[in-house]
Image (cartoon, rainbow, N blue to C red; front, side, top):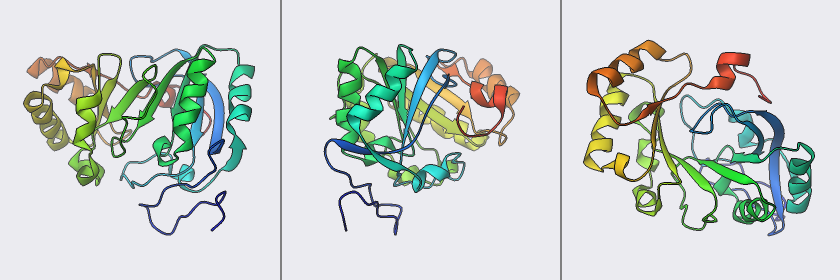
Length: 231
C-alpha cells in the first residue's frame, strides 16, 4: 500500500502518512463546545481515522473521509482564522504518527493547543505544551476494554479527563473509577451526558447528590446548532 493511503479494513488499523504530511478530515472555526475551554473561539483540526467504534460516536464520517495535506499547509490555514486557540481532534488524532509533529508545529507557532483523544493511544509523545483532553471509555460506549490506563500516570494539572455517560450505570462506574484512582487529584475531571441519550437534569442531580469534585459539561455547539458538521 502506498504511504499516502489509508487502510480501513479493520477498526484497529491506523492511518499511514509520510512524516511531513497528515490526513485531514476538516478544518473549521467555531466555539469550543467542550472541556474547560468551552465558549472560546477555536479553530478545529479534525484528523481522519480512528481505531475505536464507540456506540455514541458523532463523527463516524471521520473514519474514512479526508485529504492528505502537508503540515505547513494545515498551520497556514489555521493562521487564516486569526484566533489563539486550536483544538486537534478526530476520530482519534493520535492514530496518525504525524499528529505529534502537527501538535508541536502549532505550539511553535504560538497557539494555545488542546488535543481530544480517546484514551486508547499512548499520549506520552505529545508535546508538553499541549492540553491533553483524555477520554475514559465507559461500559456504555462499547469500548471500555480499550482504555489505556497507563495514560493516567502521564497526566498533569494542565490536562483534563472526560467521561461520556449513557446511563446511571455509566455514572456509577465512572464515580468508582474517579474515587479508586483519585482522578480529581491529577487534573480536572469532566462528566458529559451522551447527546440525546441521557437527560442533562439527571446527571446534574446525581452530581449534586454525591458532591463530587468534577465539572458537568454539555456539548455547547450541539445546544446552539444541533448535531451537524462544521460547528
